[in-house]
View 1 (cartoon, rainbow, N blue to C red):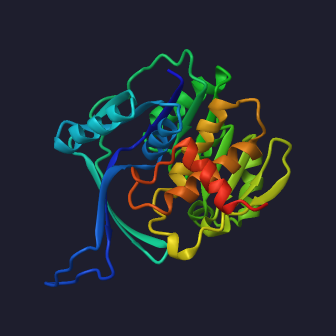
View 2 (cartoon, rainbow, N blue to C red; view 1 turned 180 degrees about the horizontal axis):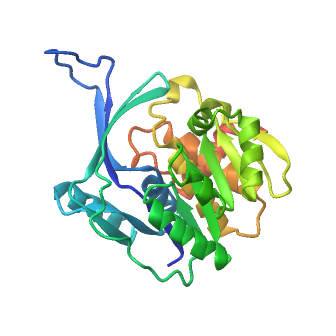
Length: 296
């Protein structure tokens, strides 16, 4: 096991449409995509596409959507450690004008305790806060073993404060700042106080406000992808997380500025494609994004 990602599986149905029907109306979407979804799950697939297939501990139902998900994971050589639920979770995503509306149906009533895995050989752990009991267990174990621990803080969860005490790299969404009534700068101070070695707030088209290994705060601007090239921003943050973990696994001795610059280019690729799977970049795709848009 090279890396371990822990999260909640969704099947994402992404519909490109100008009109959302109401009442008895009908509409036909211009395009659609069906793929895997979920924060840490999508990050795991991104990490795999970039050359480092991680193990994935995630919710799994014994239904046709669950079997479809296992086929998807097998395609990317991702070992799945399923934690049983009755039904698969679904997301319906409607991208429009650089934003996206999301309607979710989730089953996170786990029928069994989380599986106990051997973390020998693991070099990175990535969490999104789902499966709070498993997240805190493996964060503690990996921190004790000297393994990099990473958190996608997309929103406030019951264990967020405690979990951050075992996280090395925490990159959170603006939504978490709003929920905690903190500015982005205040959030960086909070992450430092929780002991996170590097941390940041992702701010969409405004890039990422973050601090490095030395505690120095700076802004990493988003790459200037032309507006008419942006198709689907959903999953861009997940690809960002998966890409910086992949960059770390490739070059653990490198500075975090290098990992995040790589991840920024990966997310620039994602937003130009509909659905999560089409938006997974290869290393060659990341290099092309840098050549096209990074004029620094």
